[in-house]
Length: 305
Image (tube, rainbow, N blue to C red):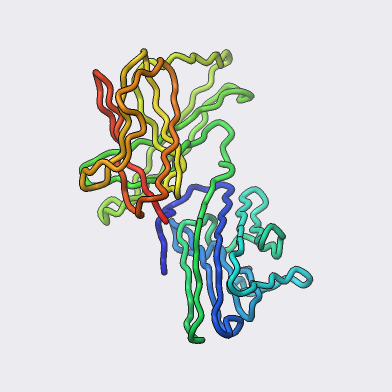
């Protein structure tokens, strides 16, 4: 099973958490694999092999090739028929990867040939009959970006042909000296003719910078839900420039309404947040719509179970 839904991830610190269960007759003689690859280059980013009831973690050997090791004294014993938590921390600052099993660190490796967890592969080799693996609650979090002056609130999503999406960038000038700061925002697409779009990002900081925050929105806006993709809940944020009567609804890709979060109720000017619970829905792309007397705004979100 391959799950490339993480997509390309920018350089930074990441944490991946996987809840899984293995079992069956003679399961300890079976082999199970979790592999991570860089979403940009396709190179190895990390991974583990479960064999003989023990977890072996990916690292580079003396020849610079990927091999799997178990650290002495930190052996992880996987028991049958119980859910376990595997957590992998990608530390870009120290260029190391820490592997945790049920909260305990079991191995530390150097960065492999890939640097971010963009694609996950789960393998059940099926060499032993009557064995199984169940995987639940896969979560990837970006803990930190390497830029102190720039951050992106959302770095992934799905945009269908003929539609558009937006990425919100936050510039932080506190503690930043005067000058020009530049980087590139790279957008990867499935279009073979234009698979990589590079957008220059520039911040000019003057000697005197005002960090005053205005709490009053200047326009109606509907933000990208977070997290996205999600399972089973996510938060939808929107802003109103004035007191308004609004509706906030969720639809599937066939246009059928699956949830009403706000039904023609009056809301004050300012920022609002609503939690959407999708425990009874199946995986897929959903559309959420904010409707006021003057505007209708829509966005897409991805539910993955």
